[in-house]
Picture (cartoon, rainbow, N blue to C red):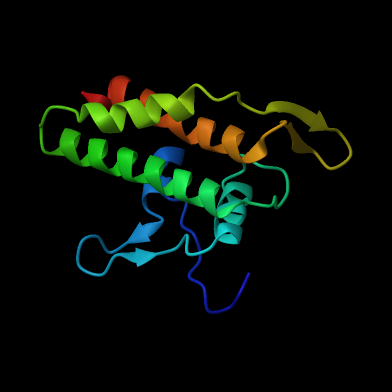
Amino acid sequence: MSLLKPAFRFNSGRLSLDFACTVRHRPSKNLELLEEPSDLSRWLLEAKVAAQLTSVTPAQLDDAKRLRQAIFENASRISEAKAPDRKSIAVINEFAALPLAKVQLDFLSRRPIYLADAPIGAGLSAVARDAIDLFTGPQAK
């Protein structure tokens, strides 16, 4: 990690909200924390939905930002007691439909091992599924 890059924060208690907060100081400054594909890989690792840094394409980074915006838009709408945005919900559902990684315990390191044919998609699926739980669960009321 470069010393010049701000650290990711994981303090909301929700994976999806922590992901939405990879743009800081909305709307005044919009400090982008996912500037390049490697930033997404680092976020997924630090969020503990990936076991190692993985190569990310620019298209995958664009997809991740699309999911992030959908989560932010719906969280904002809920906090303002507005109706959900159908297009944003469709984006969240699109990512939630991707397969999750299979998780196994590495007994020696006492860490999870994430097995996925598409680790970036699996990580984003975990984020989207958390958003669905957040928007439909007890905290949504």
